[in-house]
Amino acid sequence: GPLVRQAMNRDLVPGLQVAVVMRDGRAWTGSFGTADLATGRPVTDDTRFYTASTSKALTALAAARYAHQGKLDLDASLADAFPPGTRFHPDYDPTTATVRDLLTHTHGLQQGPISIRTAFTGQISNEKILELLPVHPPRENRDFAYSNFGYDLIGFLLDPEHTRGWKDVEQREVLDPLGMTHTTSYRSRLPDSLIAFPHELGPDGMARVDLDDSPFYALAEKGADRGYLRMSSSSALT
Image (cartoon, rainbow, N blue to C red):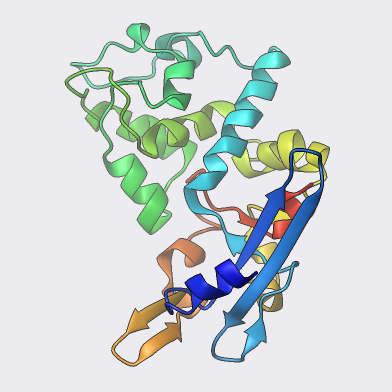
């Protein structure tokens, strides 16, 4: 408590949650500050925070569960994992990279329009991913290079026919079995009263950013980005 309040006195964030699990299994949660400076609504243990790319771990777990069930071969080449006839950049050999490489950021492809569309415009679909794959050139090597792109493609492989979408796969395979009832990929399923609003620091201090003006929140329902989860500290301790 005191350590968190000391950090908050630097006025870098209006509110936050902390969840700690001890080695003996004991758990502690703390909620501090304000979720919405415009109304003064406080952060509680039920407040949902945007988790950004932290949620890649949950997407990877969904892929691992599919692999365990025989629905996804992590060691399959990208040439075999994607639908027959899928085109990649002419300088990239999809037979030399695997699904596992997508998860470990060692696939060797550069980011490009697919990642830009998923993160900033929401103008993406499984069909558009296949259309744009050929314009993503290879990197110089297969060294670890963190990006969203591998997880953009994993989202496709989790539901290539887009029968229900990667969000439903993640809900069914990870969130529901773990009892993470305070975590969702759907912004539309949460009332504003449960959301920690984004804020920005300006000349006049910290101010709330309306959700409609924040691209990451406004596009959460449209985008295929694998990171738009909202989670409370109580879910983190489930």
